[in-house]
Amino acid sequence: MSISTTPSKSIAIMGIRGIPANHGGFETFAEQLAPYLLSAGWAVTVYCQEDGKMPTRESMFHGIRRVHIGVGRDTALNSIRFDWACISHALKDRPSLVLTLGYNTALFGLRLRAAGIPNVMNMDGIEWSRQKWGPMARAWLYLNDWAGCLGATHLVADHPEIARHLSSRVRARKITTIPYGTTAIEDVDAAPLKDLGVQPGKFVTVIARPEPENSILEIVQAFSAKKRGVDLVVLGNYRSEVAYHAQVQAAASSEVRFPGAIYDSSIVHSLRKHSMLYVHGHRVGGTNPSLLEAMGAGNAVLAHDNQFNRWVAGDGAGYFKDTSSCRDALDKLLDDAAQRSEMSAATLNRARVTFAWRDVLAAYAFLLSDVHSWAHGRPSSWQRLPTSLPQEPEST
Picture 1 (cartoon, one colour):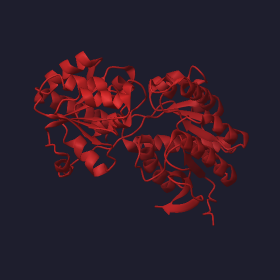
Picture 2 (cartoon, rainbow, N blue to C red):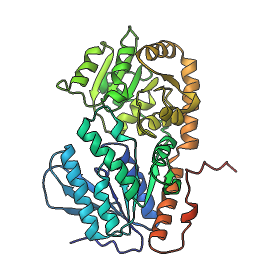
Picture 3 (cartoon, helix red, strand yellow):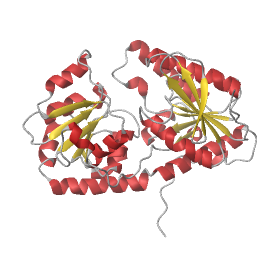
Picture 4 (cartoon, rainbow, N blue to C red):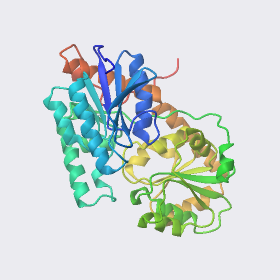
């Protein structure tokens, strides 16, 4: 029996694997946004991708309706099948608004437009530009980038550079810039570090998917150039049969640790909070969640030097361009506790002022309510939709 969603404002969130979050940034965002919207009077549905093939079922999660769709094991093709199934379900369910996180199958979203269901789409990064994709995948993503821009009711960019990219395709009024958010990580137990074999304040972290555009190889080569006296903890699922993964592992010194992909928040928070330095090698994308979470933990940050990272981390971070400059930066920072302390304070302050979840969620709630009102013929401020996230008000 279907669980009713009859209130006047109903929203379906799709494009993710579901909640609770156990995969990536969009899932964490949905886990933050869904209860926020629920408290604001929305009926909230979140689509959840399940391994294995099974009949579609529903469940409730803290007042949030979840629709579980089984499409088989986690592969790119099955993720596409899942997105198609989500839209097919939504066409029957008819929520009054859809929020799509990511544009990888935006062509399917044209079905929502044809059915008159408004669709707000977070366009994520410029996915088709990533090195990991072959010609066919890149062409598919490029086409969906255009489909998302033209077919969605309204677009969300999580970074000014993403908004600039989108504005080359649609009018600026169709785009709102709202970054990803983060929470300041306060006191965190260091006990989980014992099982990883590292000591608080005696290790450097890298938390990223093991892909070339995340500069993992350059970071590992730079760190391994000499004996450091501290460890480098590289999170991620590394498989020796993947050429790039094997290359990274071969470049690692005995001080580099590969504990695998860890999604347990208590362990990840402990790694972040007790790390002496976070190295962020992402070259493409928008407001990267891993970088923001490191800032929220008060990490000193050494990031790849590009327009995406510079806007997020600001002037308080250190930057590198290649293996050589990363090695030089590590040589200096690992021997300068005072400099790392200054960097830590700067990044934590920027996280609190510019990327606080309360402001991010409030901006989304305003945008979604306004688009909903406009789409359903009610009074709205469509002509004055925010084009960027409001800054945190000054304390009074």
